[in-house]
Length: 237
Image (cartoon, rainbow, N blue to C red; front, side, top):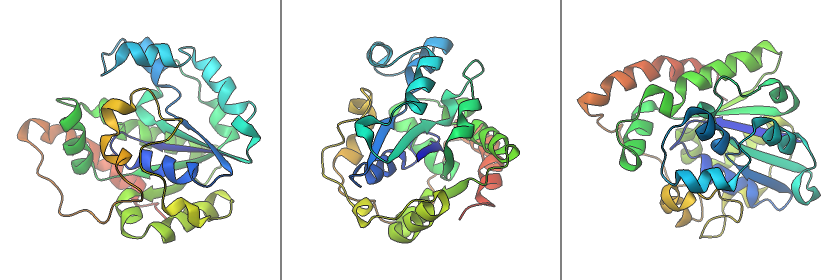
């Protein structure tokens, strides 16, 4: 069983990868299209050179790894993906071969968190448009993908993870509710820049407070992202 988890950045996605990685029966991979995305767009991201050196830049090679033998011959393979990495030129037909899951978070929270690490995010940077596009494509193939809101995961991790496992057809494991402090051996090389808070964690953080204020300069990004978020939220488990 291969599970492709699709989210934008700053969206509980690393904690979710740690949850699956702690099961013991599940291999994980961290954003395997990141180097391909940077190579094709020419965008400058933190640790740009290190990312390009750490992964295959050819998307066909990435896909071969995703659909090939599961690392360590484990029965489950959790693939953490960023929706904005799936630009034109990166094939998508391989997604028919995996169970696709969509992890969402209110865009005000995403924008506030992302802006702390990389200034002035655009709509394309935070992945909401691409997430809705991928969701519609998967549904068009006849799949019924699971949609999870990260806010609800933080409110009740056990219940939401049970629903997720049921939705993709694997048994729930209580080992998913915690993980060792200090990160995971399969973290991407970029983790040193982005994963500081989750490295210090041993479980999902508790419920979040009120929505953060978004600076006036980023209000257009928030307003553009909201309809895509609301579209997927209407289908959440």
